[in-house]
Image 1 (cartoon, rainbow, N blue to C red):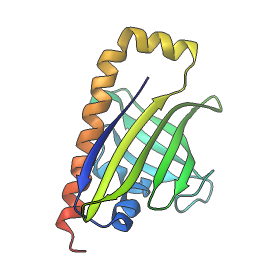
Image 2 (image 1 turned 90 degrees about the vertical axis):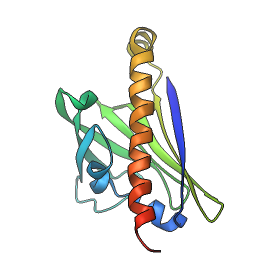
Image 3 (image 1 turned 90 degrees about the horizontal axis):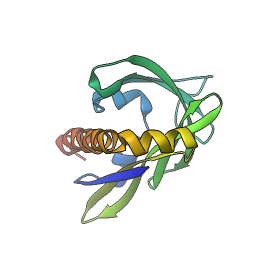
Length: 153
């Protein structure tokens, strides 16, 4: 009930960090989340900050808002957030960064919280959703790569 995708980006880790931790820009890159906004007066990434993302599931629908909370915020290392449902984290998404070859290896990941309903869902539909998530993570990272590599450092 988890997976990840890694892409190398020829950009400094600070620039990659600034992009992956700016949730207000996710709509430029994600195939499913087309906008996001900070909540409760938050203006940037920090542990405990909340935001909401506007999602078009599977790029078709339904369309809904998901409230999220920043769980990990280690500049230039890791940014992770939990998708909240009924005050519980049901899914964690994030990015891990590592300097590599003059650029940055970026790993996007997700991990479903191991609850009985999610285990049943994953057992029945996990193959399809897993493929959708992997494809979406790769597309997101490749879109970020295109923007970061086109910008002079």
